[in-house]
Length: 430
Image (cartoon, rainbow, N blue to C red):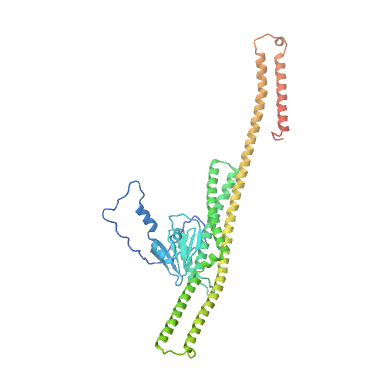
């Protein structure tokens, strides 16, 4: 498979940045039995295409295999049933890795494998290999390339088990990806919010609404990864379940001890059947065999105690590893929380601005209503003098001018009285 490069990505490139030349080795699954003649193309009307759904759910998928010892990378075609038998996993665990379903980030420790679903990284980690669900995402190829590089360049004093290395790289890739998306969102958000503050428009409000939707979705994903890491750190049993190398060594030593004890018992039975009967006092062979059996049990007990101490040490190493990435993902969450608070502050500021404009409009409407009332006084006076009757007022010289002057003075006095009342009641700014 050709070397893959992460060009054209909209997000910032994380620590993983190398592609790898992989060796392709296809392992085809057994062919399904052929359908009976005449059944091809037969479908029930108004019913879903069940055969296609079954093929999508249980067909073969492409997996990238990274071996622990040789650090070789291969591409395999494995179906779901074979994967379940190979890793001793139930179907519900493999369902977490299915790209047809959308599940939150999850890290599960099982008897012989660790199921990892962290953003783009969906893999099954065992003590001997990593089976990574192949996809066109550049982070998947970068994960396989970086894991291969770290296995080839392993330091001499580094005793970290293989499964912890693979889990560490998956956490690093997920945290880097989420942090890159958070940084990209920050770069886009702050100028947009400043522009909205200076100019409130429908276009800017729509852009901020979309930005807030992306922020809420990203915060939910980051929060889920953080909760998953915190849950693992708080449970020693889950961390002990992830120490697959120790469980593999314990299983191998148990099988070897059982075989040795079975060999001693069979040898003793054969000797007893061939040899002549002797007295219990003069039978050093039986006592020697019993001592060997006791020493074997004692050595197995001592090895179990030492393995428990080793498991405790590795649990502490895993806890420190998880704590380091917990700090990283918590920093990303704090960054998103600060951005959300800035958006909320901007919304509050915009609401204050809109309330201020609304208050100004109400004040202007109040002044306009008062002025309309004053002008209505002139209408009342004009209506009175426009009636068809005779009065001595029309015979007074300059009576029209005096009516206008008196009406204007009364109107101005009433208007000023209203203004003073509004200010006294604090309905208008002083």
